[in-house]
Length: 443
Ligand SMILES: Nc1nc2c(ncn2[C@@H]2O[C@H](COP(=O)(O)OP(=O)(O)O)[C@@H](O)[C@H]2O)c(=O)[nH]1
Ligand SMILES: [Mg+2]
Image (cartoon, rainbow, N blue to C red; front, top):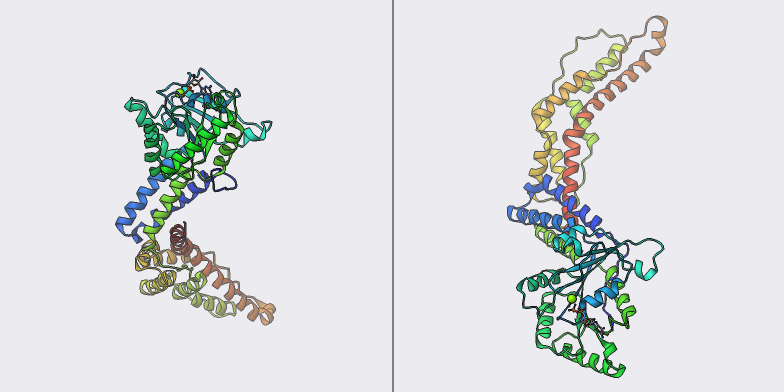
């Protein structure tokens, strides 16, 4: 029997999840008014919690060695680590401190959080020349825990804190103590608190005959089944001789490819934030941007750009040039167009989203002023009425060219104002909506 893991291709959950949390944060900055206050608070808590976890990275696979005094945890730790690890002034594993070995490094924040002393951290630099089975452990953090049967309350506290974070628990047991009551009680308590794989390592088998080793392994398996743990494999090994360690390493490599507890916790947090957010969103709604060209044309017309183009054309045909009035656009007209835009942009979304878009899009008086100023400063095409014999032939072509260029110059000027004041804020809120909606579909 082997432990079943969900296998995942490239391990970079930290980056993927961080991007998702960043999108959530940005969305809440823009759209939090569209979210009921209780949900908003929950989402902000989620963001803070995810930030904290992601700060430690979620790509490290934590494998913890747990068990009673003398079961061989420290010896097994050393046997798995081997001799390739840098040991800068590392103190020997003791019962009262956690020791850690990291394959590939980069786990400092995590080890700080786990309160592993700096002088109890071993690092294995991996390079392409490493044997495949060693490279397959990249990302593993192996922890030698204090004895679970320790009378020392501090030790118990460390075990209790680390165990829920562990991606794989290796219970190390001594053949002479495997039926120990305290051990089974600890199994049960821990197993009920976590639904992550565990493995029982039956150590010291070099002290038993092969038959006895299998006999004990079977009996231990039976006892575990009585405790309700039918899915927990028992592996006979000898930390001293290395017997069975190749199989154990293969299990560890399997654990390394699975999604970690930390990544799972962040995902689960995001999923429940998504569930909470669902009420503030409309099922299957997909907000679409209204046509900005229509708005530009309508507001340019309202400001008199078409009238100006007609006048310029008449002038090009030889009409007398009228004095130019300052640009004016009616605030009421701008407001009507603006509200039509907001309605179209929030079609199908809950009412709160209409308010959020309405607040993000510039108010009509400001828009009107912007448009007037932009038209005042626009680069209007020169009108140069033809003279003499050329005028006979060119007048009408020239007039229509001037009309077109004038219209274009006016609409371009209006568009340059509407893009930052109307289009971009609307787009941003649509993105926020979609990022939140994406969370509701996460599972
Ligand atoms: N014969 C034998 N002795 C072992 C084995 N593993 C550990 N020991 C010995 O058992 C004693 C306790 O081991 P240790 O690793 O300190 O146990 P811990 O308290 O669980 O960390 C030490 O004397 C080890 O040398 C093993 O597989 N076979
Ligand atoms: Mg020890």
